[in-house]
Image 1 (cartoon, helix red, strand yellow):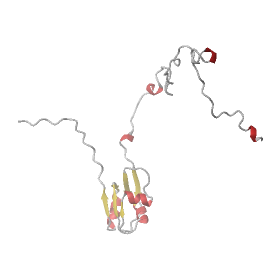
Image 2 (cartoon, rainbow, N blue to C red):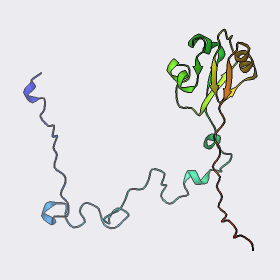
Image 3 (cartoon, rainbow, N blue to C red):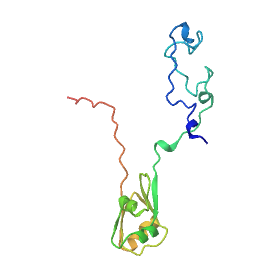
Image 4 (cartoon, helix red, strand yellow):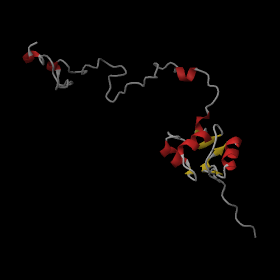
Length: 167
């Protein structure tokens, strides 16, 4: 291979085509846009990928059924009491931040759920958004406490103006 010819024919800085500069340029009059039509005028935008030439788009032709729970569904990280027993020392306070540091509850979530799989041999103070019945019994049986974090309150959207006081 001859390194002196490697870059022959490769033009990194290609000049842009200058259109509309008279008949001598070869791109005059209609400036390579043809005559009339959708793309002839200045400021014409390409249609979106869903555009079907004026035909009713597929998204609008298909019947719509059902709905998604995604708008109000909550994602909880699940941790078993057996895992808590292995990861934390006696008398430790276990909350969402402590679980994250221990590597038991990673990723985005709205809260933590504690389930009753496994055994507890230590006294733990556990703060979570939900406890299964067996998990709560196992934690309390060893002298620990299972503190329930209350859910967030829904905002009060009072769109009514208050009535003026009656005389």
